[in-house]
Image 1 (cartoon, one colour):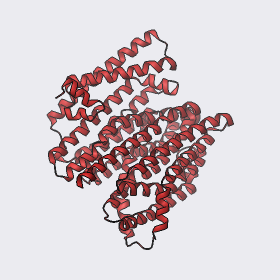
Image 2: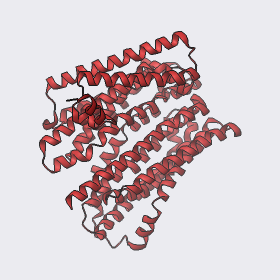
Image 3: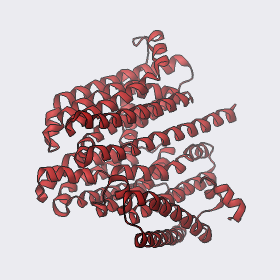
Image 4: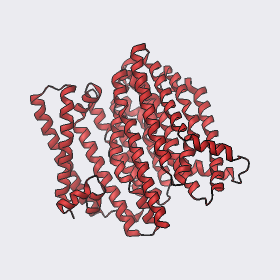
Length: 524
């Protein structure tokens, strides 16, 4: 029975991981054609408000469902589960209504604080999404708590497909209707809300059952106790899940005003912020690649800890760190060396490539932060995560304007790195002694990783330089050159990793095709 439950848990985790990967990939990729259609200023308008949407959807997708699933899983029978769910629903609904009215009433003031009063209609549009949050979070939390991950997976993917289709459709329609960038942004935000509504509709059968069979007044759950748990542990999970979005929200409130202080006129400041925002989908793609493989190991980590298998726990934690660090460093280094080409291929020009190169250094930092957080969460240590998030936000809020006023838009990228560095330092300091690596072992791994990365960079640079001698740098030629560079980079990094024994046999096994590499090359 115990093995059957474990198998169900592992299969569920795999389903959720795959659906989350698809959803994150779609969430990152759609912004590339959107920017190409609406231009840099139109992209600025959308990205200024996107963090508000991103925070709400993180609450509905990752934060509250994870916590509610724990509450549900702790109960033995269906009646008690539904009492918990009913209580949590009323609490989250109250929070959602407060956030909705707060955004509706404060839309103009929030827009002025962002340095652009024309953003008010977009804030009003995105506020509707918060009313969907309790319906999404509760249903997802209930199914995850009963180890049925398929409804959540279907909801995630269907929501993103509809959202992406509507946003791209709005962008294309705006060309025909000759809408302003602000009108286009407002309709795009409503498209995001519509996607959330579709995600909620996938849980129709659950809500029919919920409202027909359960009386909110019949439960014997202490509302105050559940609310305290939700706003303590649950909110900490939410804050961490939306860390990058929260840093982007700080940018929304500080960058425009600071660029004016730096000496840019309004139109140029908006245009510049739009180019800077290109970095967000690139970082999101890099994070997805790096975190996905290590996140599949989280259930095994939790299981090993629960079974008191100390050595197994240490091995899995080490594997998560090694694989996550290596992949994220490789992804960031590849994007940095190819940034002018990537920038031109995806967005039409190579403007602010240096600023974007700085920004993509966020990939290894946020990836390692996420892995450390997973290790701490497996030990039910939520307060360490809270301190790390607060440290990152404190640095970003206090210093972002100063950095932008003195260094221009590159200052925002630098401040993001400094903020993430502060969060990582906090997590490293509180990491359990049992999973800390010996300095000698850590230095050895770092040296091998540096060698693999330099080999990859040298090969990519050489190929890019050779191609530039024979081909004109156009988007059409880059459509061939950039994938060739990426394939060469992957080959060289893998070859270097095999030669230097960067990964152990168990670590290779966590990577796609890793088992075949182990078998053919007899990796130790």
